[in-house]
Length: 193
Image (cartoon, rainbow, N blue to C red; front, side):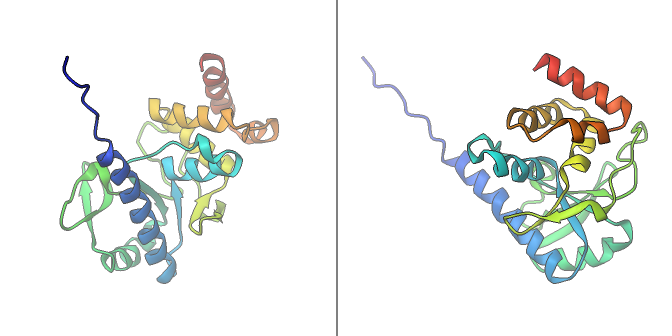
């Protein structure tokens, strides 16, 4: 009988560390250059979930940030200092490492106060809704992050909302702040998860 093959998960572990390192470098570069930003997406959800249950944090493969459009040139200069170059890929502004410019694992930019897609009903939040996380980077407040996740409504966004619900971060006061259409979307996620 042949011995069972032991799977090698080292690549997955390295990927998690790569994203953590990238997030830290981006935050330090933007903070150092006094460029206003907020971490959004999966890393923001992870930061919030960790406040309630560190064991419930879900890994993510990239870094998403919210910037003011007028700060894009300053952000480009700051992020060049950590080896990231600006690219526009299919209408999405991102910063990618020069050595391995893979859009799947880079830094994706969303512009504050603008619609992410033409079909979006709600614009991305303003940066005044950002707060400093316990890990040191700026992150969107919970209500604004929830609006972004519900507006995007992809399966990954629904999973992130489920994560926030599972650790009981979303309460009735938070729900009351949501636009009516997004309250309905949240209700649907609660009923189907």
